[in-house]
Image (cartoon, rainbow, N blue to C red):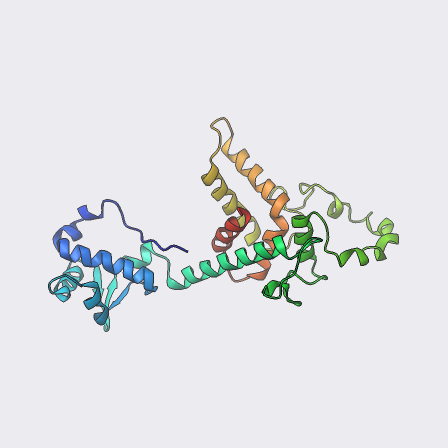
Length: 270
């Protein structure tokens, strides 16, 4: 994952930077990059200051200047960039996003190559090991994802399906909605959320965030109603990836919807 810092294009015209001077400004920019690269949450130690100030005359003096104009704060061990938390994610948030992206890529690779009638499980893939969420033959979510991705059920499942063949006549009557092929036959509050989806409060939020990212990436025609187009995108996501999104959220109950949406958008776009 590439790392970037947020810097207003007109920062140099701020009174603080004008007062600090060009050498203190350079030290400030170097510190921004250094803290982002090292995941230091805007903290610069006095020992690190000598490295950041390479080529500058008296970097300690420039650091004190940054403190005097309010761009830095002095701490017991060094300095803190005052606006860091306002414009940058914390090290924990970045690490969580990295892990989500890694998990999404690993799951996508696994579902593409290792499951389904033509899949070849790999001993090097941790998701191929028995007992993991979404991969055992008794897991309905994992089975639904495998079937959707490969156009059918795993090889083991046909042996289990003949057992209830004589019972559907009694069970289909009271549960017609659950067996309708169209995802729009739903009791959910968002068009297309089926009754098989878990009632995770993040599900609808995540769908909306993914749809917004897709719309921003691909755009839409000026002749299309924005609200209708967004709703159509959400319905399409549920139809094609609803089970996958539900499984992803179920495996990460403590992750916020925004982080899950970012990782899922990358996975779905593959």
